[in-house]
Amino acid sequence: MSIPYFHWYSNDIQQKKELHMKKKPVIQVINLTAAYEESIILKNINFSVNRGEIFIILGGSGCGKSTLLKHLIGLYRPTSGEIWIHDVDLVRTEGQYRKKIMAGLGVMYQTGALFGSMTVLENVCLPLEEFSRIPRNGIDQIARMKLKLVGLSGYEQFYPSEISGGMKKRAAIARAMALDPNILFLDEPSAGLDPITAAELDRLILQLSKDLNMTFVIVTHELASIETISDCVIMLDKEVKGIIAEGDPKELKQHSKIPWVKQFFNGQTHEIS
Image 1 (cartoon, helix red, strand yellow):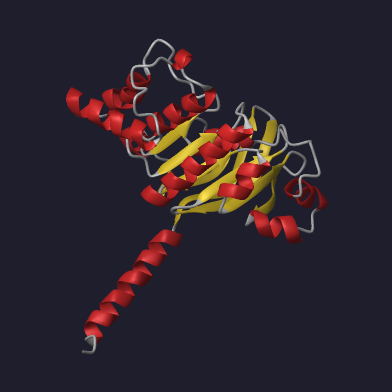
Image 2: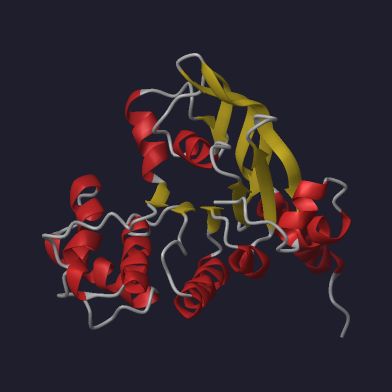
């Protein structure tokens, strides 16, 4: 029995639509300049992050990685330029609408930034208590589900001081996911972790990306993580005050014409921090 033309055509259109949506940028940075008083850190940088992508920001000390991240999550406003999140310019959006956009961004800070006086469960519940109207029993259920997603079932009543560094990072990711963000920003997720724990965290990121089709923007200098999880990277440079390399790290490792970039991806430099 042949497939009706209309049925085939409809499926083809749907597949093309899904492919388009997957490739459509969820973040677009246009001519962004960032400065502290008179000191320019980043000048006229441009890049985009696609839906479902694991996008990594890397570079040497003082190149502006953390500065860029703080602009992307709305903590700082740029000197000039645009930051589009889901077709909304975060720079020019004000009031409740801006808060709504920022609520769709999950953030895990380098140290985890868990509150030591709260249990792991209470830490994950906090964003839901502050930014949702979900009943208390619903908040508890959601928080437990998020902890299960990161492999921390059974640790709900532990305090941050009672769990390992890797578990703190997982708990921080669970808290960042509490409000079901579309984009998750991770600041140096592997910092301070031993290689085995760091590799486990990489596997978690890949699993969450696959299962939830979540977009990740990650600041890291860990070469092993970059090679394992990234779909695309940008490398910032302090002297250029901008991007000196962009693309697939495997391609940059083999074919970059910039010696500094090629050295980094081949593990031949120790200047990155």
